[in-house]
Image 1: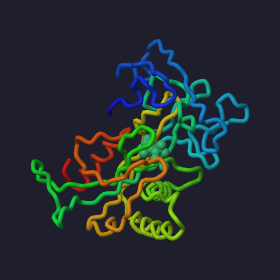
Image 2 (image 1 turned 180 degrees about the vertical axis):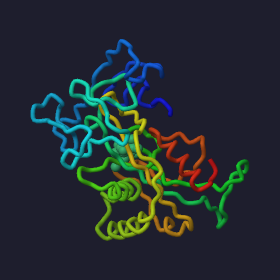
Image 3 (image 1 turned 135 degrees about the vertical axis):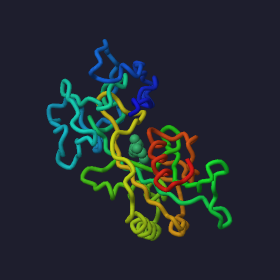
Image 4 (image 1 turned 120 degrees about the vertical axis):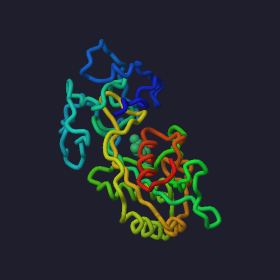
Length: 277
Ligand code: RP5
Ligand code: MG
Ligand code: MG
């Protein structure tokens, strides 16, 4: 498997903090190197209901590697190590310690809904001139935090089922449900509930997210919801909302440049449908 990359670029995406640069060989924890990275904890985490307390806080007694009340501190990657009370990133060093901008020490669980349809122009399914394979489109959003295009995913709330997170995040980011009126919201919720009944799991595990640190990282379940006829998503009235500043159907191709490890999820979806990549 690939060594994580996006969480090793020098400038941390928040707080103007610089990571120590590492070679691929220096990433695994079991490789001995002299290593003293800077530490960062974003001030925005202070007193946030969705964030853990400071790790030094005497009242903070997290149960790592387990279901801790309604917070899932288990990793899809197996048991992670704890060093001086701090969880260690299962994919190795990142050049930065602390939890950065991430709310939870250890795994931060997210869900990624990958909604797809065939590319159709004037009633004709479009194929790629070289691969001769049909072109798939996915519903992508532009993230407000970094301007990169991404899958409209988000964090699993405490006690929430992943199947709920998938719908809620899609509604928030691609339908602007947080600012919709009651009637609109009910209509959209019904549509998405129906459409999200049949999904296919694409990926479950670690995400190479630029926000990851040595002690906090993203994990996700990515699910594909495919509309083969295009008739269901034809009813979608896409409108960016919450952490998304734009939303659009994006043609799937290997030259896509997407946030975190989202390209690798999209590639799996393309192969699943025998579409152009
Ligand atoms: C990525 O961050 C996940 O794959 C998911 O798309 C996203 C969740 O974080 P927010 O969108 O809530 O910032 O690692
Ligand atoms: Mg969101
Ligand atoms: Mg999001």
